[in-house]
Length: 156
Image (cartoon, rainbow, N blue to C red; front, side):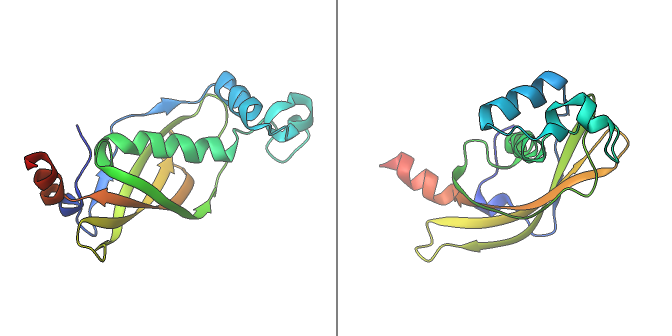
């Protein structure tokens, strides 16, 4: 499925994303390496064993990035101009190696740009593990193409 144009988003609509992803130890290790995040809670099994969690946690920024990726096919694939912001990020519960994550996006706000050529859409993205426990949530605001503007460009 391709993404939605501005006109197709409906405030209050919740979009259940089809893709799911099981997070591996390798995913977490590579993400921490790429971002130079050497937090021992993510990488050191002995250190993490002595914490309240008892084991290593998946990097929260990886969880956020994965959720954005999961959400793209049904929201902004091919219809986005830009991601404008990620706000109000929280991680109410930890993610562990082997957890399978899914996401849903609820459209909370939309408005046309001042030139009327595009629209700004804000969605509340919620991420759940295999037990339906909320592990991450955030607001994602995007600048979206309008279908009528896209049609006008194609006619030129």
